[in-house]
Length: 508
Image (cartoon, one colour):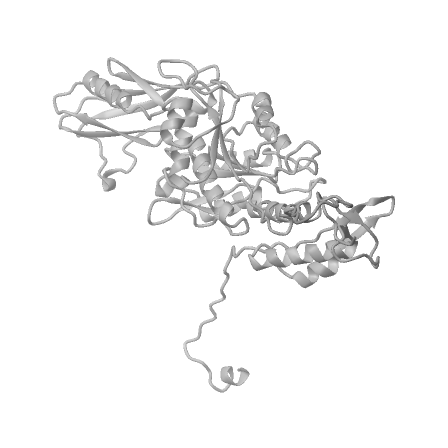
């Protein structure tokens, strides 16, 4: 009997017609690629979230995020920015309990206005217009600021006015609160935002936020569930190490040979040029992590930059993991003003140091310029560009998933024989040549959709062989040539005032 059945037994004699269904040649690889946003929820106060700390939960809307994590919480604000960049894909929240200390800042009204107008306050990049009357004294202006801040429940801070001083306090506790900027009149007079006549205010940091999550339980609760795009805004060395271990290439990592879950980490760091370079050198040399460099004077906190970056990266990579993310807009975040933005030379330095970069052009909306990972050195400390861009591992993950689907669907219960073995057509037997042909065919499909190139070289370098010490095992050397990206278009404009017809045309 040459045909290998899975269910219909041999020797079954009762008439007449029996069919077993075999989907092994029909299926296509369909993978869940969920995003997970990691951040503090508000666990105390008058309007705490309802989610359980350390337990991932699916989120379908901003209203759900506010209910689960608390309106104005770190995680709630992250979801607001994420949804502005990616509203259609599967997304989960991984809430962390509050830290130990809330951050506080003050707005002090030092001089009263002499004319009516509007004071434009920005809290974490969110606009708070404050109406001011000509007769207002400093205490009245302070009270108006506090009223306007408290009226917007989406803000990450609440306000209390005492005399001429407004004290702003983060709704949640943690180091993240220190990175919530509070500024006045971001767009300036050109944008219609100028200080009412004579009015003067000073803004100061008073208490730094404290407390960073411990991720042991949260990471454990993820289990083996897919987590393809993770927004992890905590950039302290302990947090980065915990997530690097989870997503690494080791036996226990998501990129390891046992788990084969894969995935990517996205973050952002808001600092000065020099401090960002110092951070990059200590960021862990992680191929799975991409941290975007943000100007210190951006009014948007880094955790929202991270959410915007994750949302847009997840949207682009899920469509085509090999296509560069450059020029994709980061909605919902405000860049630093023109003269305070990084220079092109500084952006290039960041890219070489292992930081992702962004720029802002005429429309005022920042865009991704290069999705660089923090990997810059090999295991011996020598410079290495194997994992420079996020697209490298994203493309490789897609290839390996395609290959795994083909092998596990078509050959789940096959026998293994040497090349040249004579067996009947329909037998559930494979040889090294059978599998090699399967891998070449799969590679040509991947080439057709733009994931790889040079199928001839791949075929020539592909090795499929039986293990000399285990006759039940096939060993494969899989050498894909990943497709590259158009990153730089360099032109030598060798102009002339007039062609020398006797020389230039003769060369042609």
